Length: 242
Ligand code: F6R
Image (cartoon, rainbow, N blue to C red):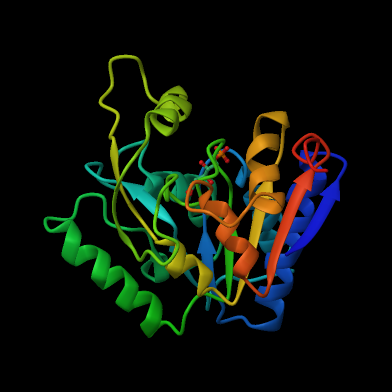
């Protein structure tokens, strides 16, 4: 693991954006693994600006998102497909047909998981995978106790994750407790992974990921096994490192 500790969230976003921009410049046909949540939003804004400035192009790129709520269609404002359209895809020169998010409205979610794995393989695998980390150490929706070799599958969300994400849903709105997520084994097959974490509320999870034992209780600790994992964090998220 390469650990990069920067002053603040803006510096973390800029560092992460530069990795993705360099990847697209080096290989315009890159396969990018993408994430949702609060953390990557600033990075996506920087990539949009670089695209508008003509520094990078997504026109030949393919993307695969980590996860999606099971039970929401892509039109639902809380779906991760909707998030990606709003936060990135609608603002860059990407061909939306080359953007993949696990289908939350799949008639047969089990089959859909296998098909998602097949699509990643057919695209040649993920070149760079963006990750955030949950306060409980999850990556994607691989909650604590997820198998370290797990593949794309239907996963129940823990109460902690449902509570953390309740902020995005109205009080009377249906909030899914199930997801489709790339597995930890799937994520580890990306050629490079870049995990961003900011803020003191991530400090315990960051400590467990980097300095704790490799264990299913902290899914992100599996990144200790990856030969090209870059962990980009601000000082607050790094505050519990030894
Ligand atoms: C999102 C995802 C999640 C988030 C994590 C952190 O696609 O896979 O693992 O990265 O929950 O979320 P934020 O960035 O909102 O703190």
